[in-house]
Image 1: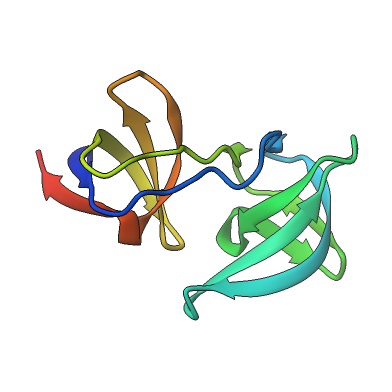
Image 2: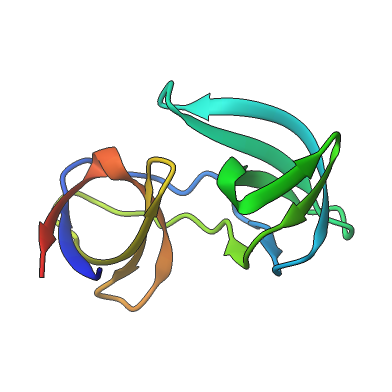
Length: 117
């Protein structure tokens, strides 16, 4: 369900060169951590050497090997208080959004007051 939202807490993008993976891509999984003490995320390394966090639910894990269950882009969006966003997806404590500048990326749920459209 597409929703609108307004930024209530600024967020600065963490990584300048985020990884992107395609469904079925083989990954090396090196660690697992909880985001916000609730949501499991895994640190993955692509065959090309790019690294980044992925929601654990997006990865089929077998030991240190993982297979991407879906396409994933780890780009985060830098936002400031008052920015209006369109929310397309929510997973593991993050929203996939589009800004009014037509930029796409992930923003922590805690940074956005979401409304139903």
